[in-house]
Image 1 (cartoon, rainbow, N blue to C red):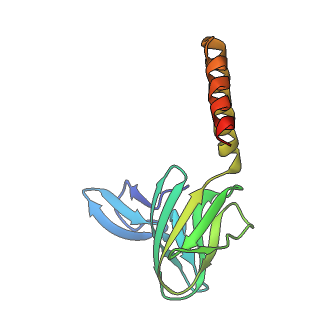
Image 2: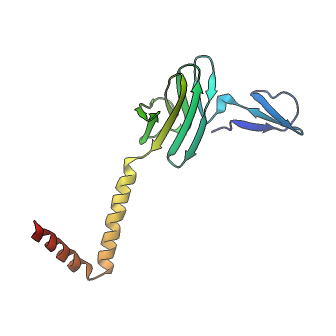
Image 3: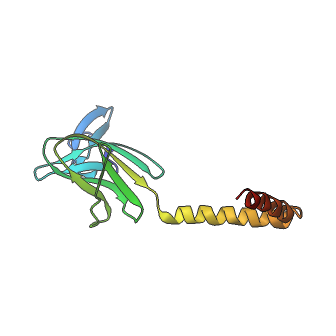
Length: 154
């Protein structure tokens, strides 16, 4: 996504954004409309604090009025969302993750856990077992003995 804060390489007023600081001839500007995570209310765009790592995104928002939280992360099947520990619905329209954001301070958690990852893990495990069976000639006999001992217990 576009940067939330950028450095403008000349003095004077930027064409858009809120000036934060000036270091030498470099003007640092905040762009609230391009925040990675922000609540869009009828009257303003309120930037939120976000931390993302892999398929885990945690967002803290403190907005004065209700709106829609938009996280600039592509929405795919497999994303789930929570607000203050309770599951919330994701909006399915648009390119980015979004959900309802009531007024106040809230903590949002987004987790990406698609079903095909678990299928891939299962198939990998089965493949490792088959490779071990082909590599170690005594494995089929050991498995048969283990299964017989289990059957005898029942």
